[in-house]
Length: 203
Image (cartoon, rainbow, N blue to C red; front, side, top):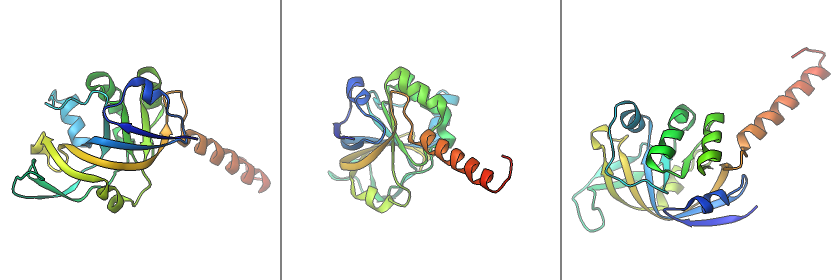
């Protein structure tokens, strides 16, 4: 197990060096994205003015406060609480995010499924996991909201955050077919079968 510090954007070789169980800290830039953002981008044909190539996105709809634009609040928003949401319902957007927008890393809770695992392997990506309930801590890793696009979808806009020391995050799925979620499910299924067998109950 290794720890990686990635200054964003990251290259394919850097992301392919990540292995399940490694930890990662991200620096510089992170994009916030959620269900409505991706529905509009990929189902309704909208495009973003942001260059996401090589970047990481986090599944979030942040709690923000509108403020006067200034040097420290260039987008006119200030972070109140920026937490992570469950990723599973956004499974179908992994490949288009990578193929069309060039995204390399996806951050979220609970993992993604096999189609995402295939996209990570083919295109060179990874899933970085955040432990549930860490929103207050995550917010301290975000130094500013630098910009926002598709803001008619607020709070499910496309956010560009400035970050410092965002992590450590756990590599939950890597570009080599590894998945902590698949491993856990296999162990749970085997344990369940064992317990049922001891009870004389057929699975």
